[in-house]
Length: 446
Image (cartoon, rainbow, N blue to C red; front, side):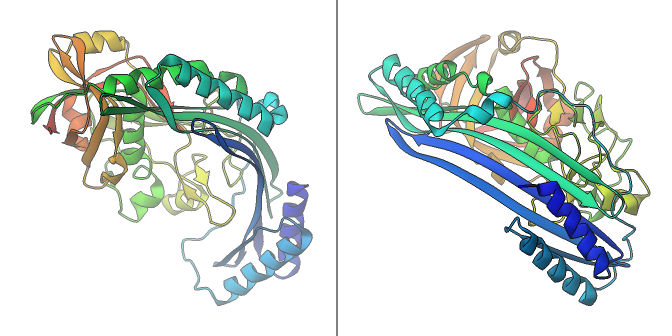
């Protein structure tokens, strides 16, 4: 399918029918996936495609989309968008679609090896995972697992001669292992998301999940109180994404749906906290040559040594504030763009995780949680149930812990209580963080 060619046709048709300006966005995503437990459950090969049309009649805007990536599909989308624009109320903040566009120089976001990965190849890799778990211990079994690869192609065209196309790849593997002994159960999960097929190392995936699941069968309760907490890197990445992923976007700021409104230049975190949106990160999961409006991605500092430095902009929100886009427009073909993070990164520290744990006389090391997505990024209330953790005593990991609830205010946590940041950065999707030690966290024991 010539996605870019269809987008160009959509722009020309919209202009021919009277639109003052037009933008077309097209996507083609090829996905192969295998799901398994203690045997292969299913394999799937699918292609997802779609086209989105935005157009303007002066300051009246219309949008429509189609899952038919054909001339007829784009023609229908253009006509629907035009019909919507004719009855829309003028948007007084509207200026234009992007007139600045281009490609940033990025590396390692497309892996040619993934093109040759078949459902059979994925099944072979899944068998390796199953063999690793089954061979680890007779008490361990797989509750669920999946391996996925995809190739994505995106094209953008608009009335200002923007004609851009990009491609990228994605590979992921995940497994949840359950262990049972003498009526006691333990469970643990491990997952990776990478750009390249060769980086999906399933033997380590099986080993780590199996070891922790077995340890969890001997998990012991701990009492309630306040204590130090060491957050595993990818767990803290999840928290970081929940709390900052939307609230640092200019859209949230302009709609006053963010606690950071009007706080540029103010100290909002401790001096050892630096957060940036690294749009051109090598092999980053959110790295693209250009955002979903065609603007080149860039690196944008958000919090520098505790001080709020910037918000994230797309073209529309940037025009409202009289600024330039930061290259953070994100969308599906079914929606209009909004600003969101590319690669949200908490800068690593200089100490090893082992040193962070040794520095902790008593505390909790958190390896996995559930329920953190229910935390509130506006109020800062953070709450999660620990499904996999370890008690720290005298600087050492001792017995396994599960079922306890950790509760804190995230704003206080990053401003006063993020005492140590390790150097072991890891990702959860497109959010990256190292392990972090925080103080005085409320623990509700079992």
